[in-house]
Length: 107
Image (cartoon, rainbow, N blue to C red; front, top):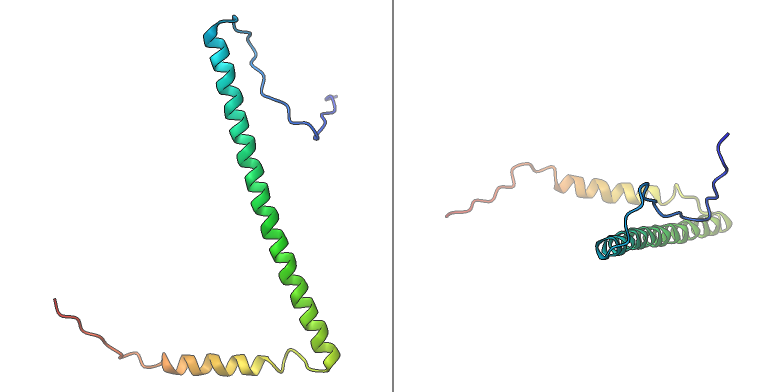
């Protein structure tokens, strides 16, 4: 059986072979600690960015739910708004139906 590993603690990577205690070994240890610190900081930044995206999406969903609840309480349905959107789409598509709108540039 595997020993149970706690997910609450982040364990550092361990070197399998001990090095002699020299100045170069100390510099290497400092470098490894700085690399781990940068990696953890980057991971923390990514988590914060993702947290902000989730909060923004939650706000959007709350607004949509509130609008739909208000629409259902006032008696209007979402289908009433759909023809207006469709009319604007067809108006824009009729302007784009002229395929021969040409522009000539001389060099």
